[in-house]
Amino acid sequence: MDLTTRVKNILIAPKREWPVIAAEPADVASLYTGYVLPLAAIPPVCSIIGLSVVGVMGYRMGIGVALGGAITHYVLSLVAVYVAALIASKLAPTFGGRDNIVQGLKLIAYSATASWVGGVFGLIPVLSILGALMSLYSLYLLFTGAAVVMSVPEDRAVGYSVAVIIATIGVFLILFYLAAVIAGHGMMM
Image (cartoon, rainbow, N blue to C red; front, side, top):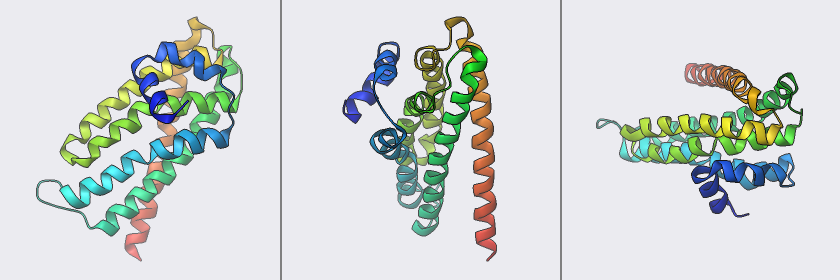
């Protein structure tokens, strides 16, 4: 299935799309190259343009600073997706599901679609809050896909989804804290 159709289907009809996703053959490399790499690039690319060309309240960031921040954001996002997939995979048996890294990566990658697409609002920085709101839809996508993709029983899907979300938020906080430390250290040199 092509990228555009998959994005449209997961955003508009997730309950119909998750069984298709769950049944598709895939591996980590194909999921990254065909889906994660292009979609995860949307927020950082749009933020470069938004912060260095459009600006916020009359202030525009230098292209070098914006580019450095965007590259850091992109790389950390790619790492965070994989770590979150590992968490989703390893937590699944606790909730009656199956431990499968490829299925975990499917769940995390396709759930993140709304958040990544919402990154387009970074083109106009004052609208970035709309992108953040779209991230809430990603939480719904995770919930609707948990039972189907990870074989978690329906009655345990809410608990599983909450556990994955909390663990994933922790991962993102740690990674973005590290990015801030790295960026701060880079500024001191």
